[in-house]
Amino acid sequence: MIDSRTAPYAALLLRVAMGLLFLAHGLMKVFVFTVPGTVKFFASIGYPGFVAYLVIFAELAGGAALILGLWTRWAALVLFVEMLGVIAYHFPHGWVFTAKGGGWEYPALWAVALIALALLGDGAASLSGRPKARPKT
Image (cartoon, rainbow, N blue to C red; front, side, top):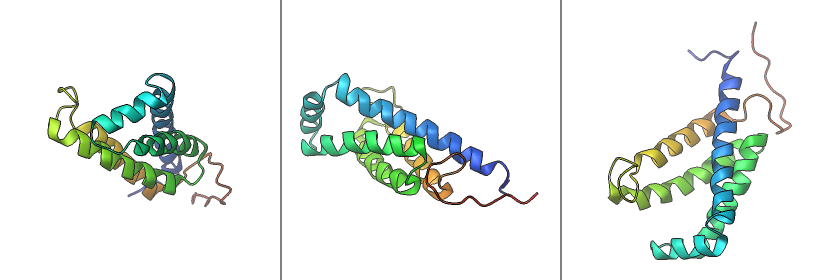
């Protein structure tokens, strides 16, 4: 049974945590690896270079949207699609993410969390502007 009193806070916790992680990864691609470096890396692993720009945008905009609670379901679904690409890249490296090249279980966990968030929706403290249902007391 879902506890309707605490479920909005669970969605909030998941939404903000995922948003912060994606924002951090997007910023790392911009400021640490640099945009040209990220494009070069994507090309080196067989993805078209332009995909790096899409990923950076998705991580920055999607992460910010999740943190703020704007378009949560759509942002989570877009980021889920990105995670499918990450899983495809890491799959040949095996299960353990600490293996050379990283394994696929960590991005798979992100993908599952994103689907859970898409199913849950905005949760508490979102800026979506949609009225929230009041829990039954």
